[in-house]
Length: 252
Image (cartoon, rainbow, N blue to C red; front, side, top):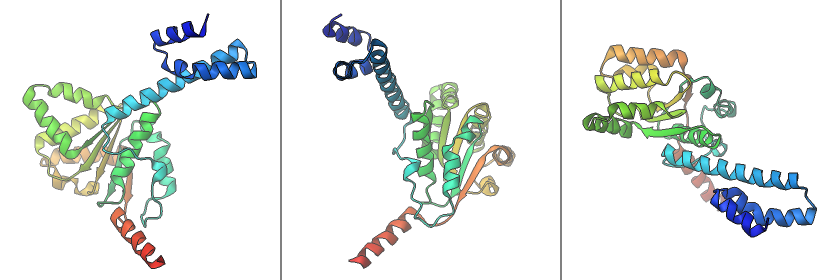
């Protein structure tokens, strides 16, 4: 079979990874006298890598992340309570394998949203799905779904991702209906799925932003006993930038 026919067949079969690597692999095979098995191994690996990368990009697009950040870039120079061991525990994804919620608590600027978005990036790169929603977006979507008669379909959408991120919980008080929605979503996702919630409020204060005290207690009880909870205190990112800027001016 000629190389031209091979290229056409790969294009028709949508083997984009093989096609992209074909000419280079043919040259290397001729130079290094690769056997047919080795030649095929190289092309199959190229196709696997290509499909893996495309899959990751599709999952990242579906995750709707505001920014794509990595836990490897977390700033440990900031004066915060979080440790490298805690970040490694999060990166290990044991909580995800166990279907446990992850609760990130701390004041504005300590890195909660950064960690949540970095988790989503990591799981998408490792073959899992994620969806990021701010509290405001989540509540707006729920209201629109109810109004348009697509509420159950939207609930099903929230149940599907391996990791669902609800960012900035507690920014406003939930009505009894909204609180019930949250309770049911946590229940639906308690079997093999993980929910990440970022908030400024410790669990003991959640009743302040949930209208129905019974539902508030049910949510708090579920998270208190099931969640991996990380409370972050210390310097905000803005404080870090200001300190570093002041230090750079002193050096001049």
